[in-house]
Image (tube, rainbow, N blue to C red):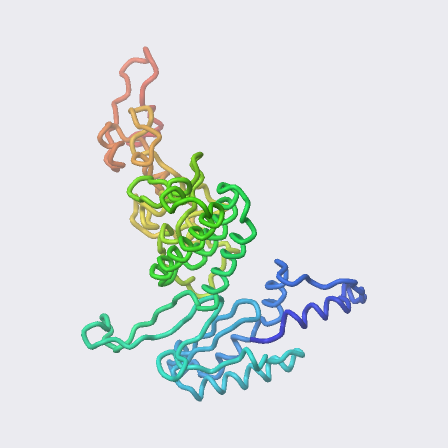
Length: 389
């Protein structure tokens, strides 16, 4: 970790250059401001490239050196301890070139499996490897498993925040306390829902019950435990102990949050790179693509239903009705499909039968033109052997 944010605030406070004209500024970026991580990313851009030069690409070991950075926090990972120490020196020299330095008290070299303190904390998570028995080491058979869990510091801070809210609401109504606690619980759980957090969520639920129980009993020192339970806890569904009031305001539990594993972003992909296909499938949402297209793309696993080819960046697509409305088709997802624009054009050429339209067949049934021009023919001939839709 380096003191990039502090240095950037000093730079901005001193002044900035705008069109080769020095413009003094009277205030820097606030601590925790939304612009601070962006400025840190700009200042440290290129550091990863410099570190990766340690392991030459032609040795086929480039992938072994991992660099993960968020703003001014970063981790360098490699199997060899000497490579990590070398990376530390390279980063120190690179930072010195822009007037920055590593923070000694926050810089640590550790092993993820061995040592007195195996593993490391990063962005509120603890990354560590645990030894496993011969029959419990998974498909790899390496004898260890890698677990990412909420860090002890993050758990401690969360508990202190919950307790501080309850202590500040000693005389507040139950609904007011619940409305204050729920966003804190939901936000913390959503941040940690992608890692091994189920056990931690259960422990936090026990802690939350203890502090709410003390809060309720302190309000009614002369009442029995049964009376307090009936006043502040209700049965709902299959749960008997729900901290809720008579109007239905209920305290959510940590364990109610579903664990959803995080899938690493592919390569150097970015939401701003214009690859709508990749980000629509990954995020299930995009400001440039309608929710209907995203749902169909996920349902079809990124493939065109007509040609079977994967959608690629730059492709144009169109939503098609498998059975047209004119033939009784409904505007529902089970009757919709996503096709390339040229596949849609090819598929929607005139099919002579209802069966052909329903299955998107290329078979055609062409009607003969009228012998006499009493009425307009269904298909009008342009020249011998050709027919136009």
